[in-house]
Length: 88
Image (cartoon, rainbow, N blue to C red; front, side, top):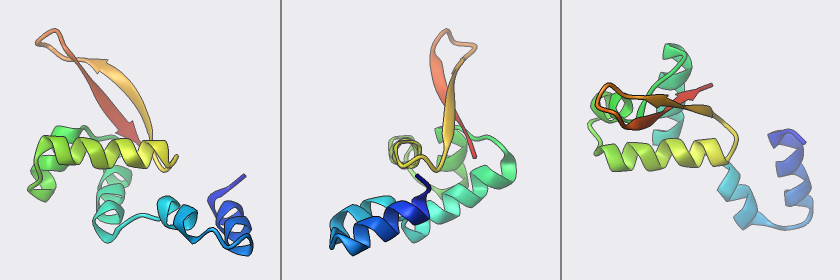
């Protein structure tokens, strides 16, 4: 089911809280546009671009992933750790 169909169905059922959970804030829309234009981005890149903490940027990206606005994959870092890379 696509977002539009989901929102329409929830609206008919009177479930406004669920509708709000699917919608992006103004700042999240800006971040989404940034990821869309770059074709991929990490939390560090988003944090740098929008002057956010890495934790805040990471939380925003993870939420958009859970809402199915973004896809992600785990990528190894040179330091031996891993980070999520987000894609539209």
